[in-house]
Length: 104
Image 1 (cartoon, helix red, strand yellow):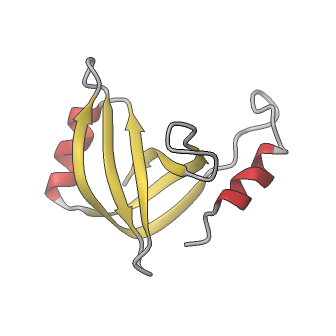
Image 2 (cartoon, rainbow, N blue to C red):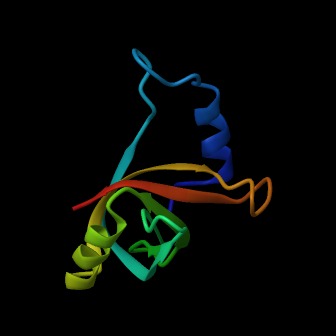
């Protein structure tokens, strides 16, 4: 619930990310993963909603083995996640999404 557009703006000041300046990542537990669906032609993108323990909802996306991750979520949709927030320019200047690196 601490992720906001302002936080993402502050993180943008730390760019460029790369060798020697890793992108900041966060972790949270007991996140409910809702409405997972495969996206894109390649089937390597998984979209979903994330609901934290305070009831906040976020748009989420995972890139990689989307089918394998979908199976994992279907076994248990309350998980710990490792992620980074980023602006979602498609939805507007103040919109953001959670890009998930891993679901544990």
